[in-house]
Length: 321
Image (cartoon, rainbow, N blue to C red; front, top):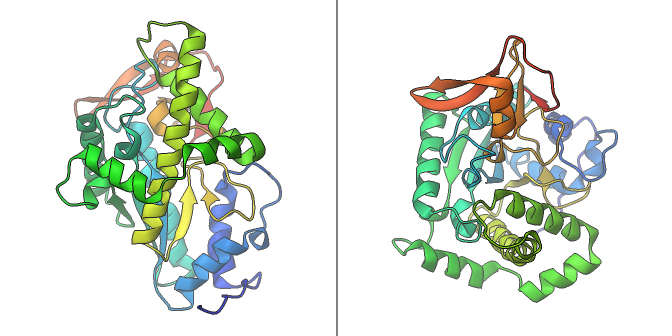
């Protein structure tokens, strides 16, 4: 067994690197940012700094756009993804200011692993991932790379790949149901995923209660496959600083990270559209709300975001930059 890596001193380079992330921590226990409250992340970072290597962050996320047209502009990345990717790239660039080898981030797109459960076709997920890579290239985001289900299990079809990953890594649905009853973090995640599935379901012809029952069942599958995807990433990249788009408590094995300067710990660009204010600041909100407040802006001939009307109403949204 490898010797334990000691927790870093408060003024160490790993503590300073973690300090760059702490203002953007998605957490279930907000408080004063303190690197010492995150010993696992300090150890993960130190595995790189001790070897003088670039720090590798792995972030499952950027799966695909929501299938609900009331929430998003379409199935391709837009201004929300552009802002978010630029934000993550800047975080990595700032690491180099205090640690010369710098950092890079692997965006581990997880859309294919549960696409059938959220009713998004694999072709749309492929198109989203391809456009995401093109956005990274054209924006010159040199600290970012991507990884998705196309990188594993060769030329097998997506259903086969999903089954192989699930069989190898996913917890049982029974164990997840038990955890949702006894563990508050799992219960919170389960409720959040269920809420998103209900919101994202378009064209359901049954009753609201029937939809909620169906989404509660699908939520367990989404969580199980998401955890399988996380374990597969850990298998392929055993040395990494593991990030998450979901809120995480201090001391967890993963570090919850915001994707923008958004106050809402759940807001993501693939569930929302961007509304630009007159001063240039941006908000993440449902497309239907942004459409009511602003005018549509195209980028490269595709819907990108909305700009607030001159006499627009300053209604609630999540400020981002």
